[in-house]
Image (cartoon, rainbow, N blue to C red):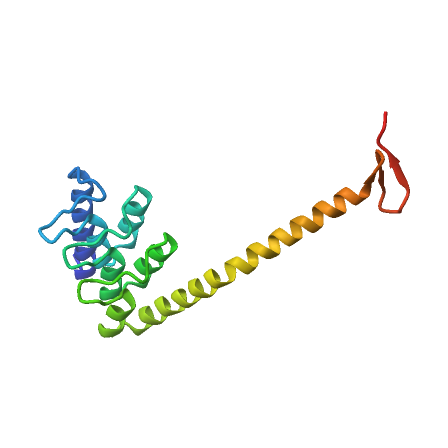
Length: 171
């Protein structure tokens, strides 16, 4: 058996054992308070992490070091796990006990692609949150305009067709 297939079999076996052991998705499985999601993110196990996310894991649960699964994924350089966590609304601004964000950990560990990804997502989220009030206002204005146009088109029980001819709505 090749080394790669041996590692794959070992990972598959350990994940199967973890799932069969009866652990709750948010229960710590080790002395430092890491949940199965922490372990999956740290090991770059995107499939297992996805399973955890689909089964109600607390995505921002912190271990005794103040690290959430997103910190673990950043520290090990797993872009797959990071993207899953981001897609499920993991907090990017959460700091560990040393004051480091996931982006800080990715950069310090030399995973520049992961650090750039986290920076880009954070920038996009910040830009979007700043634009939200303006978008809401534009939607309200569009709805008000539509309501006023609708009210103007109905006059005394008659509505106008697109060619300008009135439609008799009274029966």
